[in-house]
Image (cartoon, rainbow, N blue to C red; front, side):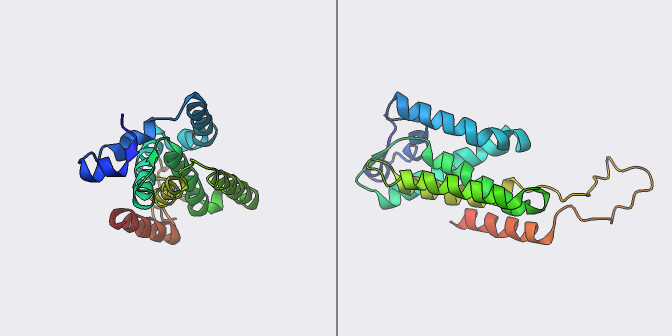
Length: 192
């Protein structure tokens, strides 16, 4: 019915299963747990960056999680949005790293996010939980966060909104490390 089954993907030419498995769940509790997680995790990112960027991260991370799961768990059947949810967590971490200078309470934000990631990865130790999808989604989302969630640095003013006589060379839009992280992540997402 669309679950990730590697034999069907490889032998049956059903590559669409790498995407559809992200919208299937193993029961009502599984669906509710994933939707609650998405609500708690994704609402801040969606408010700040819009549903298109976050939606792209969600879908591509789900695909990345399915791909990693298919590579390492070839005998299991897998369903669920956990890879996509971990992609949102990974993108939150890369957004925190990229936009470090705008956070007031940097260390608390970083430690809180790391604890949430560690606890969720620990849940992957339970039987019948696909931790490879979690890891693949996290890595994909982490790289995509550098690509999609970059913000202009504080003090940069668009020429469209600049007051008359404002110098356009006051500040570059992005810092050098933001541009480097963006380029490296884009290359890794395309190649990987």
